[in-house]
Amino acid sequence: MIMDDLFARAKVSPVCLGLDTRHEYLPEYLKQNHKTAGEQIYEFNKKIIDATADMVACFKVQIACYEALGLDGMACYAKTLKYAKSKGAIVIADIKRGDISSTAKQYAQGHFSGDFEADIITVNAYMGVDAVSPYYEYLGKKGLFVLVKTSNPSGVDFQDQLVDDNPLYLTAAKKVSEWGQNFIGNSGYSAIGAVAGCTYPSEFKKIKNLMPNTFFLIPGYGAQGGTGKDIAEMFSDGICGVVNSSRGLITAHKGKTEKADFTDYIAAATEEMKKDILKWL
Amino acid sequence: MIMDDLFARAKVSPVCLGLDTRHEYLPEYLKQNHKTAGEQIYEFNKKIIDATADMVACFKVQIACYEALGLDGMACYAKTLKYAKSKGAIVIADIKRGDISSTAKQYAQGHFSGDFEADIITVNAYMGVDAVSPYYEYLGKKGLFVLVKTSNPSGVDFQDQLVDDNPLYLTAAKKVSEWGQNFIGNSGYSAIGAVAGCTYPSEFKKIKNLMPNTFFLIPGYGAQGGTGKDIAEMFSDGICGVVNSSRGLITAHKGKTEKADFTDYIAAATEEMKKDILKWL
Image (cartoon, rainbow over all chains, first blue to last red; front, side):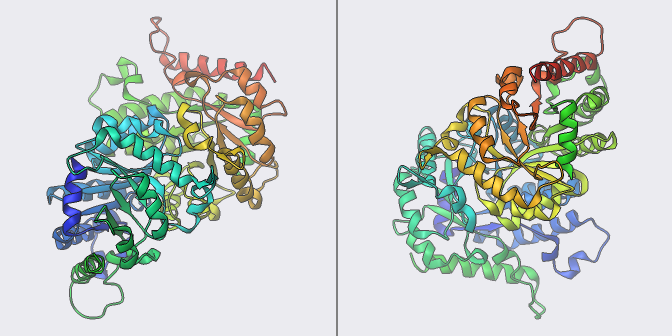
């Protein structure tokens, strides 16, 4: 069960390193060749994976950054996933797909097998259970993180609309928890997890109370404003998720003048994030 | 303004032909070669575009069907978009992306330029205006269809939750209409359109009342149960959208034993759908 495995790794380090790689993040020396942007980004990602694989619970790859570069980017995306898996890492594909049942089946095929195979994908359930159930046949070996409460400022536009005096995200929390009941592993966590941002730690308590068997992907740490203390509040009953940082880690080398390799800065930032979270627990 | 252009075409034929192509839809003779599945699907799509471009307002390409085939599928996706554009067609990329602002910027680059450039994309705004505003700089030449009320049965799971005694999709309708006010073209329609399924025609009236400047992408016709009469109810004040059919059109040749080319059946089905809608108006 992938979520059991992820939970076991999260207890050692709850860090999820986000490979939301933009070409401008690359150090100059990786751009001084005749490779395509996608190939250069792959080299960058590969070195980051090598440097940090033992320090993180998992990697999250934001597919938008690769779609931005067209076919070259998608080839880089496929290679990055494959490389991370070859190193024994768990890979979350941050794709936030959500569509009617027949279409979601196609996404399931695309992201749970073949070139773009990932271990866990993120899903947007605005279209209801139809957008989620086509993945059920893969669950166990594969997992989902369904959006419940996102970390961005305008997440409130819909997610905080009041339904029976409670914000909509609590309706989402209840539904996602229900859907997950048939997929609970030995760790007590379901293969259907949820996304809940750490930019709203007090709201997380209410979400968690409705979702006792749910493991979380927690965005919002670092560049988006979430802190180790916020995470500590969320993990007061124990580690129940992985905490993502993308820009905060993979741009740690930017503006540094010493001659160390860029991966040293990224590894140091990853170690620091890990400590920043674990010191409160 | 792309939405003005689409509206002008919709008045002639409101049909949006959905290239949600699965390999099993192809006639046997297109599979009898050494090409990849993606290359074969491209041949199929190309012939459909040739046969129907004058009979439709636009094509909609469901990216999930191409992601399902990995890199080979994405190459087919890129070529299909390019070919449709070379024929002067308007292409809607049905990608339903939705993410935080910095990520949505990457999607905007990916789907409004380069290999995957489309004229209009579908967007999921569960994450709020952050998921939509990064596209603003492209609007006019490009357009959006934001999900308001989807055509699938479980769309009600979230979209029909009551907020101040009204279903959430009406909150979505209001917001999408507001966001679109700065992008209204000569036709009176905004570059920010909305998705509203024809499987719920009575609810469409309420949506439309809140969105006088919104042009609609209307899924749900045919295979999903929507009829010409449902559309007539939605278009009682005039054509205000394009009506999509995918499976209902591009599998019209399946099970036919006559020797006509598959494109003849698809063109006939497209013509029939056009008439089925226009006869009520």
